[in-house]
Image (cartoon, rainbow, N blue to C red):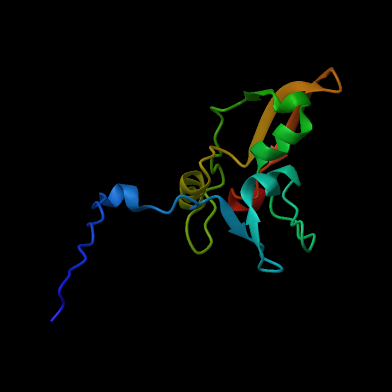
Length: 136
C-alpha cells in the first residue's frame, strides 16, 4: 500500500476540430524518390524535387504566375466553357466528361489565358491545364 499518491493533472479535452495535424498539407512526397518535400520549398524550386530532379506537374495558373513579371496578370475569358457540338460519345458522353473535369479541376476550360507584362512588354499568354481532361 502506497503512502503517497501522485495526482496527475488531466489534459484539457480539445474539440475534434482542434485535433488536426498542424503540418497537414505543408509537406508532399516526391513521386520518384519518395522523400518528403516542404511545399513552399517545392514552389521555390519551380516544382522540381531538390533531391532527385523529378518534375512535378505545373497547373496553368502556376505557369502563368511564373511567366508574367512579378506573377501579376489579368485572367481573360473566364466565362468561356467547352461545348460538345459533335455530340461525341465513347464509353460515356463528352458532356459528362466536361462536367466531371470542371468539378475536379475547378476550371471552366482546359486553357487559362492571361494578360500581363513579360520583360516590361504587354503580353497575352494561354496555358493548357493537364488537370482538365489532359488539356483537351
